[in-house]
Length: 173
Ligand SMILES: CC(C)(COP(=O)(O)OP(=O)(O)OC[C@H]1O[C@@H](n2cnc3c(N)ncnc32)[C@H](O)[C@@H]1OP(=O)(O)O)[C@@H](O)C(=O)NCCC(=O)NCCS
Image (cartoon, rainbow, N blue to C red; front, side, top):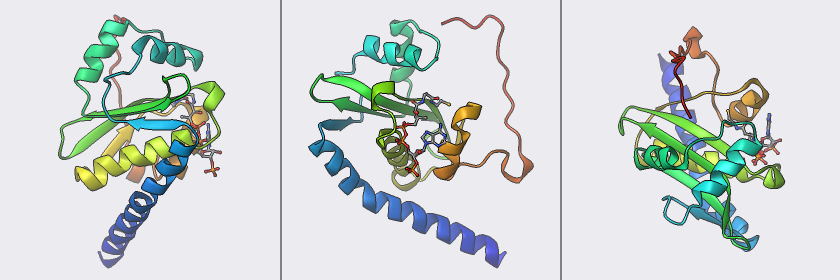
């Protein structure tokens, strides 16, 4: 029991540490021509769709993407100011108090490997945990990115609990 509390306390310290470091990280990104946005106003959905397709996600109807974003509780994207286009994106849906699920984490291939994905994910987790008090955050990870999420504190099958999915055969874009 004591050990459990200690772990929980340590976890919170880690999140606080990340939260404290984020303003400096985004200040540096700003000097490099990147801006963080928290709403989808000014987000070019067609360009976002192009990025989704370029990393292997299915191409989706922009009107449906808009509806999905209208029903999204937390949304972050990074704009490259030179082109005013999105280069990184992530969003989370949920019940607002207990649970959230992260979707559509993507970085434009031309901008991968320079810290944008990590900065965006840390900012999203900080918003969910520190700002909204949500402790249970899930996501679906393709095998090739499991290491990326593990380094951010996500665990596969925590305590042996397996995620299960019902995926309709009638799935449409
Ligand atoms: C996965 C993705 C979001 C990472 O974004 P990124 O901006 O390229 O990653 P970063 O530059 O922020 O990397 C942060 C750290 O994660 C590591 N990392 C990046 N991609 C990784 C991967 N696929 N597996 C393991 N580690 C990875 C980096 O080496 C870096 O490590 P460091 O902090 O020790 O230097 C991006 O590569 C992407 O959009 N991939 C295609 C779409 C996708 O698969 N999305 C996930 C859907 S499940």
